[in-house]
Length: 268
Image (cartoon, rainbow, N blue to C red; front, side, top):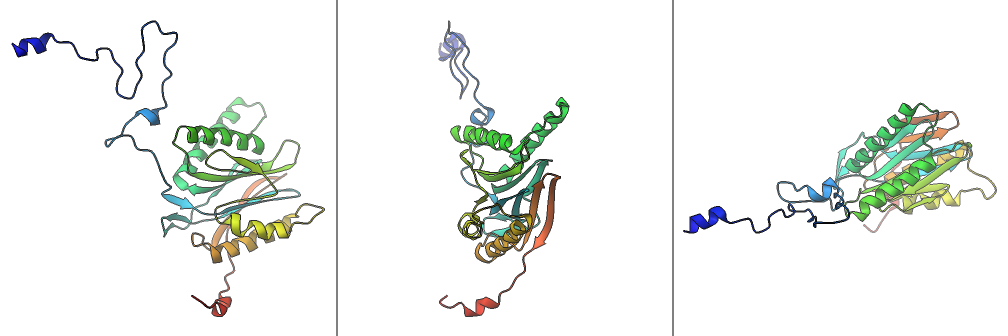
Protein backbone atom coordinates (compact mmCIF):
# COMPACT_ATOMS: atom_id res chain seq x y z
CA UNK A 1 0.00 0.00 0.00
CA UNK A 2 2.75 2.42 0.93
CA UNK A 3 4.67 1.58 -2.23
CA UNK A 4 1.58 2.28 -4.34
CA UNK A 5 1.18 5.66 -2.62
CA UNK A 6 4.79 6.65 -3.31
CA UNK A 7 4.37 5.77 -6.96
CA UNK A 8 1.62 8.35 -7.46
CA UNK A 9 2.74 11.01 -4.96
CA UNK A 10 4.00 14.31 -6.42
CA UNK A 11 7.13 16.09 -5.16
CA UNK A 12 6.49 18.46 -2.28
CA UNK A 13 8.03 21.43 -4.14
CA UNK A 14 7.06 20.73 -7.72
CA UNK A 15 8.40 23.25 -10.25
CA UNK A 16 10.17 25.00 -7.38
CA UNK A 17 13.53 26.72 -7.63
CA UNK A 18 16.78 24.84 -7.70
CA UNK A 19 18.95 25.31 -4.58
CA UNK A 20 20.36 28.84 -4.55
CA UNK A 21 17.83 30.17 -7.10
CA UNK A 22 14.57 32.13 -6.83
CA UNK A 23 11.00 31.01 -7.55
CA UNK A 24 9.38 32.59 -10.63
CA UNK A 25 5.75 33.31 -9.72
CA UNK A 26 3.15 32.92 -12.41
CA UNK A 27 2.24 36.22 -14.04
CA UNK A 28 5.40 37.98 -12.94
CA UNK A 29 6.34 41.10 -14.82
CA UNK A 30 9.92 40.10 -15.52
CA UNK A 31 12.27 37.22 -15.02
CA UNK A 32 14.41 37.26 -11.91
CA UNK A 33 17.94 38.45 -12.65
CA UNK A 34 20.47 35.65 -12.76
CA UNK A 35 23.05 35.89 -9.99
CA UNK A 36 26.79 35.93 -10.76
CA UNK A 37 28.31 32.49 -11.13
CA UNK A 38 30.69 32.86 -8.19
CA UNK A 39 27.67 33.41 -5.87
CA UNK A 40 25.65 30.37 -6.97
CA UNK A 41 28.14 27.67 -7.98
CA UNK A 42 29.06 25.51 -5.01
CA UNK A 43 32.30 23.59 -4.81
CA UNK A 44 32.69 20.06 -3.43
CA UNK A 45 32.49 21.41 0.14
CA UNK A 46 29.98 24.21 -0.46
CA UNK A 47 30.43 27.79 -1.56
CA UNK A 48 33.68 29.34 -0.36
CA UNK A 49 34.81 32.93 -0.84
CA UNK A 50 38.25 34.36 -0.23
CA UNK A 51 38.53 35.90 3.22
CA UNK A 52 42.22 36.79 3.19
CA UNK A 53 45.21 37.09 0.89
CA UNK A 54 47.40 34.04 0.29
CA UNK A 55 50.48 35.05 -1.72
CA UNK A 56 51.06 38.76 -1.28
CA UNK A 57 53.19 41.57 -2.63
CA UNK A 58 54.05 44.41 -0.28
CA UNK A 59 54.70 48.09 -0.97
CA UNK A 60 54.25 49.95 -4.26
CA UNK A 61 55.43 53.56 -4.61
CA UNK A 62 54.46 56.02 -7.33
CA UNK A 63 55.89 59.52 -7.91
CA UNK A 64 54.70 62.09 -10.44
CA UNK A 65 57.35 64.38 -11.92
CA UNK A 66 57.31 67.20 -14.46
CA UNK A 67 57.48 64.93 -17.52
CA UNK A 68 55.70 61.76 -16.44
CA UNK A 69 55.36 59.23 -13.62
CA UNK A 70 57.49 56.52 -11.99
CA UNK A 71 56.15 53.46 -10.16
CA UNK A 72 58.42 51.09 -8.22
CA UNK A 73 57.86 47.79 -6.42
CA UNK A 74 60.13 45.05 -5.16
CA UNK A 75 60.09 41.62 -6.79
CA UNK A 76 59.11 39.57 -3.73
CA UNK A 77 55.79 37.72 -3.41
CA UNK A 78 55.44 36.21 0.07
CA UNK A 79 53.52 33.13 1.19
CA UNK A 80 52.68 34.22 4.71
CA UNK A 81 56.06 34.97 6.29
CA UNK A 82 57.91 32.82 3.73
CA UNK A 83 59.79 34.74 0.99
CA UNK A 84 58.42 32.29 -1.57
CA UNK A 85 58.76 33.95 -5.00
CA UNK A 86 61.67 36.35 -5.28
CA UNK A 87 61.71 37.33 -8.96
CA UNK A 88 58.14 38.47 -9.70
CA UNK A 89 57.58 41.75 -11.53
CA UNK A 90 54.69 43.68 -9.94
CA UNK A 91 54.94 46.75 -12.21
CA UNK A 92 53.28 46.37 -15.62
CA UNK A 93 53.21 48.40 -18.83
CA UNK A 94 49.53 48.42 -19.88
CA UNK A 95 49.96 50.41 -23.11
CA UNK A 96 52.07 53.32 -24.38
CA UNK A 97 50.50 55.74 -21.89
CA UNK A 98 49.71 53.65 -18.76
CA UNK A 99 51.75 51.78 -16.17
CA UNK A 100 50.31 49.89 -13.19
CA UNK A 101 51.81 48.63 -9.94
CA UNK A 102 50.02 46.03 -7.86
CA UNK A 103 50.16 45.17 -4.16
CA UNK A 104 48.13 42.67 -2.17
CA UNK A 105 47.08 39.18 -3.26
CA UNK A 106 49.12 38.37 -6.35
CA UNK A 107 46.54 35.94 -7.75
CA UNK A 108 44.00 38.77 -7.75
CA UNK A 109 46.57 41.07 -9.37
CA UNK A 110 47.04 38.51 -12.14
CA UNK A 111 43.26 38.22 -12.53
CA UNK A 112 42.66 41.96 -12.95
CA UNK A 113 45.73 42.22 -15.21
CA UNK A 114 44.27 39.61 -17.58
CA UNK A 115 40.99 41.54 -17.69
CA UNK A 116 42.83 44.80 -18.45
CA UNK A 117 44.85 43.10 -21.18
CA UNK A 118 41.61 41.93 -22.78
CA UNK A 119 40.33 45.51 -22.75
CA UNK A 120 43.53 46.62 -24.49
CA UNK A 121 42.97 43.96 -27.18
CA UNK A 122 39.41 45.21 -27.69
CA UNK A 123 40.75 48.76 -28.11
CA UNK A 124 43.13 47.53 -30.80
CA UNK A 125 40.35 45.66 -32.59
CA UNK A 126 38.34 48.88 -32.96
CA UNK A 127 41.30 50.37 -34.90
CA UNK A 128 39.99 53.89 -34.31
CA UNK A 129 43.26 55.35 -33.07
CA UNK A 130 41.88 55.81 -29.54
CA UNK A 131 43.53 54.06 -26.61
CA UNK A 132 42.71 54.01 -22.91
CA UNK A 133 44.28 56.70 -20.73
CA UNK A 134 45.31 56.39 -17.06
CA UNK A 135 42.43 58.43 -15.65
CA UNK A 136 39.92 56.23 -17.50
CA UNK A 137 41.60 53.04 -16.25
CA UNK A 138 41.63 54.36 -12.68
CA UNK A 139 37.91 55.18 -12.89
CA UNK A 140 37.13 51.76 -14.38
CA UNK A 141 39.05 50.03 -11.58
CA UNK A 142 37.01 51.88 -8.94
CA UNK A 143 33.81 50.49 -10.48
CA UNK A 144 35.14 46.93 -10.80
CA UNK A 145 36.57 46.78 -7.28
CA UNK A 146 33.53 48.43 -5.66
CA UNK A 147 31.27 45.98 -7.51
CA UNK A 148 33.26 42.99 -6.22
CA UNK A 149 33.28 44.46 -2.70
CA UNK A 150 29.49 44.93 -2.81
CA UNK A 151 29.04 41.25 -3.73
CA UNK A 152 31.09 40.28 -0.65
CA UNK A 153 33.75 38.78 -2.93
CA UNK A 154 36.46 41.46 -3.16
CA UNK A 155 39.74 41.41 -5.00
CA UNK A 156 42.37 41.81 -2.28
CA UNK A 157 44.52 44.26 -4.20
CA UNK A 158 45.87 47.79 -3.79
CA UNK A 159 47.03 49.28 -7.10
CA UNK A 160 48.86 52.38 -8.29
CA UNK A 161 47.89 53.69 -11.74
CA UNK A 162 50.01 56.23 -13.57
CA UNK A 163 50.58 57.57 -17.05
CA UNK A 164 50.18 60.41 -19.52
CA UNK A 165 46.81 61.91 -20.41
CA UNK A 166 45.67 62.95 -23.89
CA UNK A 167 46.84 66.53 -23.32
CA UNK A 168 50.28 65.37 -22.12
CA UNK A 169 49.78 65.95 -18.38
CA UNK A 170 51.04 63.25 -15.98
CA UNK A 171 48.43 61.39 -13.90
CA UNK A 172 48.94 59.28 -10.75
CA UNK A 173 46.34 57.65 -8.52
CA UNK A 174 45.82 54.86 -6.00
CA UNK A 175 42.80 52.48 -5.97
CA UNK A 176 42.20 50.08 -3.08
CA UNK A 177 40.16 46.89 -2.72
CA UNK A 178 36.96 48.79 -1.84
CA UNK A 179 37.10 50.98 -4.93
CA UNK A 180 38.30 54.11 -3.13
CA UNK A 181 40.67 56.25 -5.19
CA UNK A 182 42.70 59.43 -4.82
CA UNK A 183 45.15 61.39 -6.95
CA UNK A 184 48.39 63.00 -5.75
CA UNK A 185 51.98 63.66 -6.78
CA UNK A 186 53.01 60.69 -4.61
CA UNK A 187 50.92 57.61 -3.75
CA UNK A 188 51.85 54.33 -2.11
CA UNK A 189 50.50 51.02 -0.83
CA UNK A 190 51.43 48.85 2.15
CA UNK A 191 54.19 49.98 4.48
CA UNK A 192 55.33 52.58 1.94
CA UNK A 193 52.35 54.68 3.09
CA UNK A 194 54.03 55.03 6.48
CA UNK A 195 57.72 54.94 5.54
CA UNK A 196 58.05 56.41 2.04
CA UNK A 197 55.36 59.11 1.83
CA UNK A 198 56.94 61.33 4.54
CA UNK A 199 60.36 61.06 2.84
CA UNK A 200 58.94 62.20 -0.50
CA UNK A 201 56.73 64.96 0.91
CA UNK A 202 59.49 66.61 2.91
CA UNK A 203 61.61 66.88 -0.26
CA UNK A 204 58.86 68.30 -2.48
CA UNK A 205 59.80 71.75 -3.89
CA UNK A 206 57.13 74.33 -3.08
CA UNK A 207 57.09 76.07 -6.45
CA UNK A 208 57.54 73.22 -8.95
CA UNK A 209 57.25 69.49 -9.61
CA UNK A 210 60.05 66.98 -9.23
CA UNK A 211 62.45 66.50 -12.11
CA UNK A 212 63.05 63.01 -13.48
CA UNK A 213 66.43 62.82 -11.74
CA UNK A 214 64.95 63.89 -8.40
CA UNK A 215 62.10 61.39 -8.73
CA UNK A 216 64.47 58.51 -9.52
CA UNK A 217 66.74 59.39 -6.59
CA UNK A 218 63.73 59.45 -4.27
CA UNK A 219 62.60 56.07 -5.59
CA UNK A 220 66.07 54.67 -4.88
CA UNK A 221 66.14 56.10 -1.34
CA UNK A 222 62.61 54.96 -0.49
CA UNK A 223 63.20 51.41 -1.73
CA UNK A 224 66.34 51.28 0.43
CA UNK A 225 64.39 52.39 3.52
CA UNK A 226 61.62 49.88 2.77
CA UNK A 227 64.18 47.07 2.44
CA UNK A 228 65.61 47.95 5.86
CA UNK A 229 62.30 48.45 7.64
CA UNK A 230 59.65 46.27 5.94
CA UNK A 231 60.10 42.57 6.56
CA UNK A 232 58.09 41.74 3.40
CA UNK A 233 60.44 43.66 1.10
CA UNK A 234 63.64 42.53 -0.56
CA UNK A 235 66.66 44.27 -2.09
CA UNK A 236 65.60 43.75 -5.72
CA UNK A 237 62.99 46.03 -7.35
CA UNK A 238 61.75 47.25 -10.73
CA UNK A 239 60.80 50.77 -11.82
CA UNK A 240 58.15 51.59 -14.40
CA UNK A 241 58.53 54.91 -16.22
CA UNK A 242 55.86 56.56 -18.37
CA UNK A 243 56.52 59.79 -20.22
CA UNK A 244 55.79 61.41 -23.57
CA UNK A 245 57.97 58.89 -25.41
CA UNK A 246 56.18 55.80 -24.07
CA UNK A 247 56.39 53.30 -21.21
CA UNK A 248 59.36 51.24 -20.03
CA UNK A 249 60.01 48.84 -17.15
CA UNK A 250 63.57 49.23 -15.89
CA UNK A 251 65.41 46.76 -13.72
CA UNK A 252 65.66 44.74 -11.73
CA UNK A 253 67.61 47.25 -9.66
CA UNK A 254 69.32 46.38 -6.38
CA UNK A 255 69.39 48.32 -3.13
CA UNK A 256 72.87 49.39 -2.01
CA UNK A 257 72.98 47.62 1.35
CA UNK A 258 74.92 49.13 4.24
CA UNK A 259 74.41 47.46 7.61
CA UNK A 260 77.20 49.27 9.46
CA UNK A 261 74.62 51.29 11.40
CA UNK A 262 73.32 48.08 13.00
CA UNK A 263 76.20 48.07 15.48
CA UNK A 264 74.84 51.27 17.07
CA UNK A 265 71.32 49.88 17.62
CA UNK A 266 70.75 48.73 21.21
CA UNK A 267 67.83 47.62 23.30
CA UNK A 268 66.77 44.46 21.43
